[in-house]
Image (tube, rainbow, N blue to C red; front, side):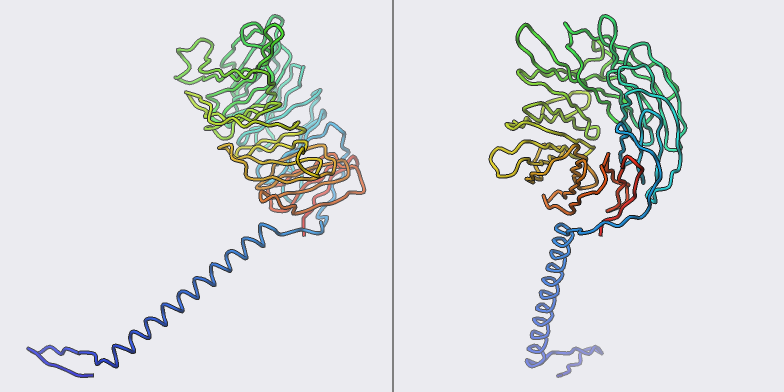
Length: 395
């Protein structure tokens, strides 16, 4: 290394050999970094593929729960556990299969919905409504007319569609059972109500009506707003959309910003809020056998036409984009959405698909299955039989 001195400062000037060595070292470091990045990328891709296409071959029983079940027993994932309910009561089981609370009641033909911490159970065609929170605290409500449908918002606001003597009623109640809104609808003006849903904030309601005009039938999707935007509107109705020659039996809020409407020949995605608008209309040419909807996805099981398989499972996101398709030929009774997965449940069979269309698990049961529900813990499910329940884990 050559050295020059000027005004008390030492300056070092690299020789040509030193410069060359530095260049070689720099290129080696670049090469090593590139190899390292490529290796990390390959590792990430392999980890992703292993997770995405992992197959579980066995299930292990974690706990058997002695509890007599009936064909009317329904279950669904709730917080970090599972809700089970039927005509005789409702209970919450945690991810360990332990009953944290249980409430008894007598509700004929029960229907249920939940949002946030609140659960509503109502008697379809009856007058009784039960509102429960996450601790099992239960409040009772009796309404004047038979119940067609019931939904609940995250603040405990209950939305009911009732069958009156000379029309139908949309009624909202708060968690203290105080009536907030009552709107009368008639078949001639609005149509026959098929389904309702309320936004999680309790501010908006969507209703599917079947409208009969002479020999023609159509579906009408109506949006109601109970905030400031709907104050100036008659009956709080802020928007309506008609669809000819179709029946839409299912409407669902997907968050507060989107609504899905599933008909016998199409899937429609709406932008929700104070000024609803139609965002996407998807034609369905096959016969729909089953549907399942949650906050993020809508699943349709259709009869397969252009395939050797009997059925096709399709999953759509909030934007209406199809993200999964899977063909199968076994029989099923129910389709249910879990966390990034679709459950197909038969009387003696179940299949679990991820959203890559990969079948992660398939199993044939020795006993008749009433229902299977996620528990809030990955790969852990609650299986309901006639003789009781079993908490299982996939391996």
